[in-house]
Length: 69
Image 1: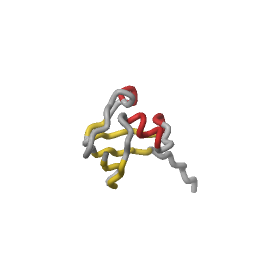
Image 2 (image 1 turned 120 degrees about the vertical axis):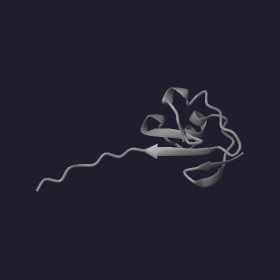
Image 3 (image 1 turned 180 degrees about the horizontal axis):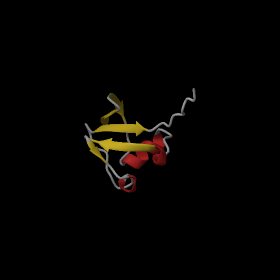
Image 4 (image 1 turned 90 degrees about the vertical axis):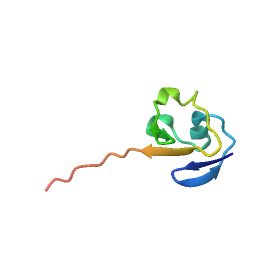
């Protein structure tokens, strides 16, 4: 099925968001997931189905250091 991941069209056969993350070697604890403009709880990823035309965003949080002058 065709979905959009981070704004880019992709083909996937995965039936759940957790399966999609695993197929892309993404650790679920390291990202937040938005499905069709709605933020999801990590606990729901295994039960949340992926449908044709879904728009999925994987949001990565990065920490930064501080600069001392």
